[in-house]
Image (cartoon, rainbow, N blue to C red; front, side, top):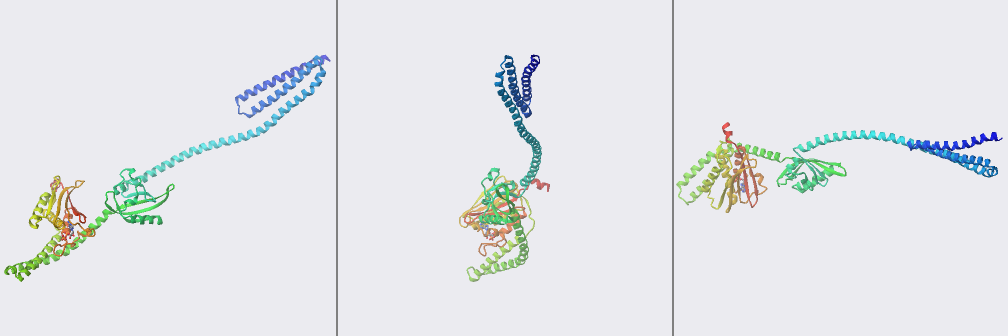
Length: 505
Ligand code: ADP
């Protein structure tokens, strides 16, 4: 009995000790695995199972060791008392191990879900990266296209000879191209346009309101004529087209204007009409003047003959003086007409303009007696000799100064000034007076042949039209500026021709 008991006892004790040692080794091994891969749920599961098994091994081995010890010491009855407790602890430990396994089965399912989600996230992350890279390339491509397009339209905006203007719907200027700045003579710096309204450049406020109403109701306007007022005060005829753009700037409607300066065209049309008028009247008048000139000369000759035979202060003598006076007046008109019609090319030579002016002033003092009117000379020493027909320029000056004398009346000044224009390619000759000025309604007609405001017998209305033709034949310009009750300024521009030009000719 003791022979067969001894090996079982040894087996039981050694087995119990080995069970504890193995389960501790298992813990150590799983701890190592877990440290290497802390996220791995399998190692976590194994570790907890090992903890459970170790507890079970410790409780079971402790029970068996105690049992052997009590048997050896002969306390079997104590063991009989302890045995159910030891068995219960063993069962409890085993339940713990089973619970861990059950618990981990659930954790495993969750873990697998997490892993699946993680993989899906990973995949999405990669897809996003790819899309992002694609998107970046796409954005770069689009930005490049936009830059090219922006540059192209900027160039049109910058290089356009017409004004391109962008405003808000209230007319506040948002953008204005260089041609527009030049046209309006304003906003030379970008910041100058801030807080400016297009309406302020309209000489007539109702024109702007009508334009804006039409744009708002129709969405656009085409080639509307309007008078724009530049910053230097000059009025410019313009042709305006515009369109309403909704949402070009987020949250803001804008109006895009295209403005053409038609002032030059209008002036040219006026000048052409004037030239046509002059040409046809010239033809007509030269025919009539030639026919009338000779009979008038004969009438004047006979009248003078008859008058000489009459004693002064008789009724017949006075009648003949009246006839002579009126025939002379007719002759003046006829001579003016002949001058007007004579379109012979000017005989130009290099002449000192100041000498011609002095000559004309002396002539007027002699023949017209200008004691009550002061004639002021304001000559510029810089003007070069002008290539002109002396006689014709004399005629122009006589016309202008006689008109000025008439306008000044009893008291006032006439100033004759010379100089060069800003570019230096024209001699500017101005005749200004402090006379009654020209009515604004008449100003557009004063160069028309036969337009006169003087009483019958005092004016023929040909002086300025003749002067206009002469200056045009010299390649020059004549313009007027007048303020009623203040005075009038006539500006004559004659081209500067260098003496070398004459030599090369
Ligand atoms: P005329 O002197 O025979 O009337 P002009 O052609 O020389 O003809 O002038 C036409 C008109 O222009 C004048 O009748 C006058 O009304 C106006 N005018 C010309 N010069 C002046 C001036 N310096 N001041 C005011 N009015 C002028």
